[in-house]
Image 1 (spheres, one colour):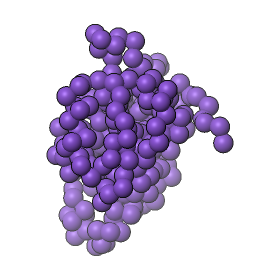
Image 2 (tube, rainbow, N blue to C red):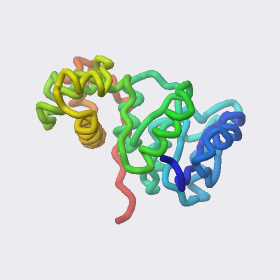
Image 3 (cartoon, one colour):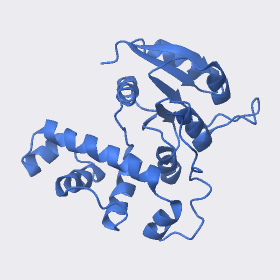
Length: 225
């Protein structure tokens, strides 16, 4: 359900900036911007910001984008849903570390796009498939140790592409119960990434020191309480 949902769209491609609001009629787009800076200056009220990660182009070469844009919007008090074709999982993980609450692909069907935006607006973390395997690796190598045995089972199933129906049959639990485990798990993962230093994840994944520094957000103070 997306009725009554208000969003801001930040997207440098004119066709998408003008077209997406028309394609998602159940979402009210309070404003659209080509730059995150413009949105932060205007500060419209909305339940969620739909953000393209890549905003710099020949017409706006100095536009804030990526992790920096996520961090600025989150610091301003917005919930951020990424709308992107970015594939690099460390970039996406860094965006979650910067405070983004979810991601949906530009290639996704429109109902899936609308559902992801609605979930983020409601406070749910939407973890992309590309990060599920990375999360499982962090768990197996001891970087993320606070999951329950059931949550680990659900993570393993999702990392292997299993549906809730398939997991329900093998785990003998209802689909609604499994979705509850997944909801809690994704929130734990997002919080973990926001609190963990890149050096710790680098050691866990066998990366060289500094490999994540091009991607990982600088820690910034939160918005005033």
